[in-house]
Structure formats: C-alpha cells, structure tokens
Image (tube, rainbow, N blue to C red; front, top):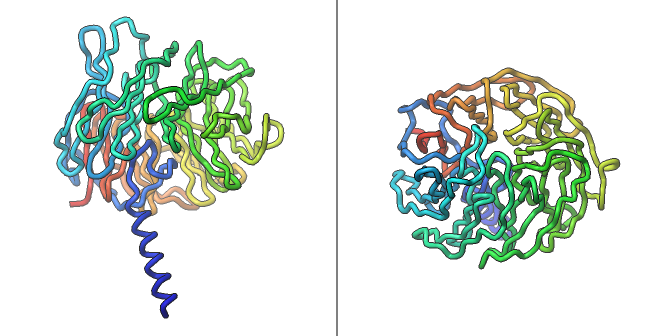
Length: 411
C-alpha cells in the first residue's frame, strides 16, 4: 500500500509539472507545437475573447512565463525603425513595460512584404528575456522591467528579406542561425554576457542560394544532445556545447528555409525551402555526411515553405502555404489524405486537447480532429491579417494579428 500511494503521488507530481510547462519559446516547451491546454474551439472578434490589445507590427510570436507575455515589435521612426520589446500582463493585457532595444537606421536592408522588422520570437529563462533582431542585434533584458542586461550588434551580416529565425537556449548558450548572402553559420552566445562562445559554418557545397530563416531544434539521440539547424541546401546536427558537427544531409538547391524541424518517431523532419519545398525525414544516428545513408524518405508533394510540420503519434500533418492540408504516415511518408482548407498559411499549427488548430493569413483558424480522415470541428474568423504562430497560457490561446494581440478562452 505504501508503494502504491508513493507511486500515485509521484505520478501526480509529474503530471502537475508537465501541465505547468510554460510557453517560453517558439512552438512551446517541447518545441514541436504541442500544448497541454483546453482552449475554446469557437470564437470571433468578441465571442470568447477576454481582451484585445493593440500593438505595433511584428511577426514574432508571443511567449508567456509567470503570468507575463513577452514579444517584440517595430515602430517606424522617420525612415528608420525603433526595434522594441514589450511585456503584457497575461490576464488583463495591460502593458507592464515597453522598451527600445535597438534603433534601425533608414539605410538598413529592405524586408520582404510578408516579413516584419521584428519576426524572431523571444525566449525566456530565469528572469531574463532574450530578444533577437537578426542582423540588427541580440539582447538580454530583465523580465521584471525590460532593463538591458547586455546587448550586442557584433554579428553583422547581409540579410535578404530581413530577419527571421528565432533563438534557442541550451545550457549556458543562446543559439541561433545566421544565413545571409555573405555569411552562413550557427552561432552560440554566452547567455550571461552575449559574447560568442562558438560558431560553426554551414560549408554548403550544394550551390543553393544562401539565405534562410529557420529556428534550430534540440533533440536527444542515445543520450547525446543534438542541435538540428536547417539552412539553404543543407541541414546540420551539432553538439550544442561545442558546435562540433555531428552529421549533415544535403537537399540540393532549396533556399529561404523557414519551417522549424520536428523530431518524432526516431526521425527528424525537415522542409527544404523554395522554390519547390520537399519534406525530408532523417535518421539522426549517423556521423558525417549521411545524405546517401540516413534519409528515410522524401515527400515531394504539398510540403510547406513557411509553416512548420506537426507530428501526432504515427501521423505527420503539414499545411502548404497555399492551403492544402496533408496527413502522412510519419514512419514511411505515405499519404493518408489531403484536404483543401483556407488559401494562405504562414503560422505553424498547434495540437491541443486532441485537436489541431490551423491559423491562416486572413485571421481564420480551422480546428480539426486528427484521424483517418479530415474531420473539421470549427472555423473561427477574426478578419485581421496574421502570420505569427499562436502561443498558449493555461487554457487560453494567444493570437497575434497585424494590429493586436488577442487572449481567447472559454467564458
């Protein structure tokens, strides 16, 4: 009886710990777009909306820790931009602080019409908020009041279409990719002072156009941590402590890679970018160039250029930028079904409470039940442009549009 009670208490403790995981980084605590939450399945501009807070433009996704939401924005100043970070109270939407991190001059490189000057998502740890503006710099702020702990603009490079990929914290490092026209590498900064701890060049020999925007993914294979970083023409696995390359897979001329890789079923799923995206599934237990030996399968139909894939059990779901939703066998790549949903997608899908949430660029969220066939539950329209991925706070959905941030939850 004593062991039984102890086991129940341990199970309860673990369940509470998992349920309390906070949305501190892009795509959530597991980095794969899964959430332990029960948000509503139906809403509009007023129904099930707790608050709506107007904000400056930025396509970074919100993150939320200890009842506070953190995001970045860009405010036009003459011909330049004020690159800013904001903190909002998660329950009320009240702005706790709003600080300028960097000034972007008028002669800065132009961005793509679908991009913003504040697209990478922040990451929060131990009372610190780490914000990244690509070629314009990286900074660590106090979560309490936004005061700068450190800021660096040392890593200059020549971007195409602006900034994109979000940073990741692994141990003592803040890690992100730099994929410009003149420099392509993965960098780790000492998170205590912003100094470069290591850098690993991509050494891409595929001839692909060099610029990309992907966010790295941390995985563990046979007790070894691996940092998976996709770029133009190649995906690399690195030791996150040293930057030493473990393996790489080339995928030809793919470039402007945006989707974050996903790890499930013993495979890393990587989208290969423009002009025609493929999805490549890779066995991550190799060494060196494993292009010829460790690619489990390649999918050449309806792969996304911008939204990240989503894996649920043995099913892989992906929505193309043009609105074709596909369900694949995650172990073989075989197509199970496809369905036309909405017209244009950039944000990455979420899986919560047995349902998948797909947000399109017009502000319409399609909710469906994953399974052997397409089973739509609801469509919810806000009527505002959006490209940012959603975040979760408890059972609330945090949805950012071009104009505002919404807190959506059951009333």
